[in-house]
Length: 188
Image (cartoon, rainbow, N blue to C red; front, side, top):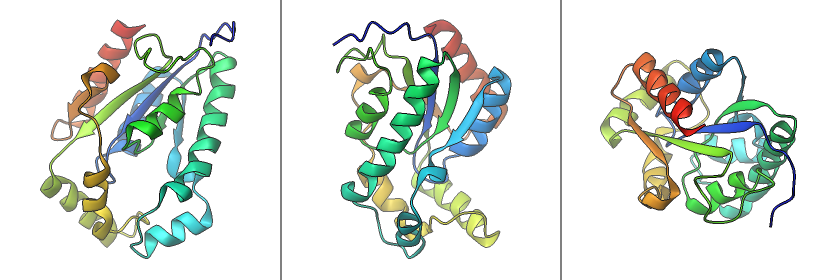
């Protein structure tokens, strides 16, 4: 269902579980690309933040309005010809489909031509847990360590057709950003 819009912008979604480094990498990538960086956490309602801070996992009912707000913001930016980097967990395929829907020309399954690309920051539970513990001790985030396993349980990123670019979190942030920049250059 092509909208005949001349979409010249693009969105790079840095995805993964909490503590993978999405915000750190997203900010660095935005700077390298001279584009805006958005953090999906900033779109959460106060009730969602409150639930998570109490160790209560969000339901799809909690997530859908949040994802809808993000989709709306991304669509406007794409139509304005902007490139934007978004840090968003995007753990399930259905959530990624909502974000892909930001591209008015996206047809389900046409991953290669979609203007919304996904980069998964992969790491094992031990590495990520250590990062979350450090952040919690510094009071830097509302996501408690107790919800980490629920995020790993939700993660669906094995469908090769989705064309998710995967990169290890054990690399330096600079190496991760350079790899993403190379991917962005070759997928344009």
